[in-house]
Amino acid sequence: MHYAVLVIGPDPDELLEAHRDTSGMDQEEGICPKEPLFDWRSIGGRWCGFFRLKPGRTGWANDHTKKTCPPDHVDSALKEDIDWDHMRQHLREMAEASWQRAMAIAPGQRSLLCPSILPNERKEDYIAHASSMSFFCAILTSDKLYNFCDRRPTPDEQAEVEALIESLPGDALLTVVDCHY
Image (cartoon, rainbow, N blue to C red; front, side):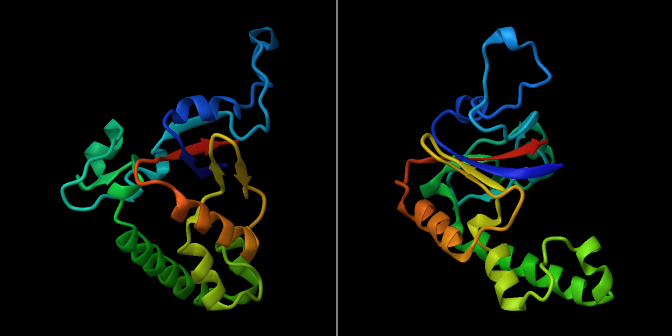
């Protein structure tokens, strides 16, 4: 399964390495994950170009992102360079479209075809979740892992994630990573 991880910190590779599942590797390497999060990863990957930049700002994009996304979309950027308002609006629009597609499906099949929409979920709750930064399955900082890979965050956890991102200094580096497990 592939999922999006938001890594906050100056060296995403170093932060991620502590959470790599090494069960299939030679344990003599001495690598022991704190909490396995993935066995394979790629910066950007399926979420290439996730961050939209403010006009005139720069970030980092892998080669795939450079070829397939507009130049103002990157995989890694400083918080102050990201156009948060545009991104949240875009996420709301995508959530609204997902909701509309899901409502066109017979109720008994929605959970199979639209697993991100919970049974009996209200539209406004789904859109609030899908357009928030707790959209990520995991958020990794130098001192904490928020792991929602097997469940949706509670409203309190969602608020904590939003507060965390809001509280970051402008020069905090954010990177979207495609993880597989």
